[in-house]
Amino acid sequence: MKARHILIPSLFLALAGSAMAQSTAPAAATAGTPSADPFVQKRQADADAKAEYKQQKKAAKQEYKADRKAAKAQLKQEKMDSTAQRNEALATSPAAKTDNSH
Image 1 (cartoon, helix red, strand yellow):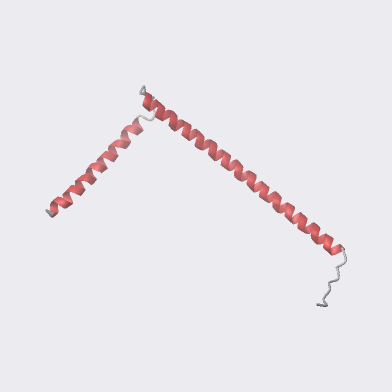
Image 2: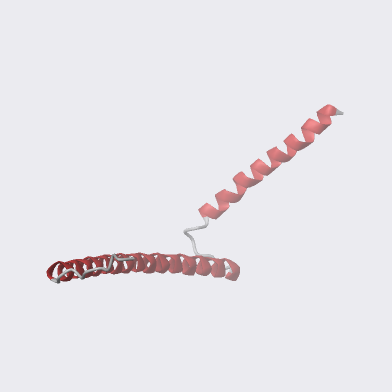
């Protein structure tokens, strides 16, 4: 009885392993040759379109990141200029007297 419990799962694993090994070989062999099957052509066209979309999306994301980095640097520079201008204005103006009589 115990042998059957061990034998059945191991048989399924062996069959699944051989099925996976067989499923990758035909796909790799037919990747370079065009097929007359319309379903295969559609699948290949979809894969090509998906790859093109991913490439365009990646390029757009890189452009966005570059623009964002430039905008951040510009904002930082404007902030530094504004702070320097404020500090200069405060340094040249006479200090206002505060009322400490509270």
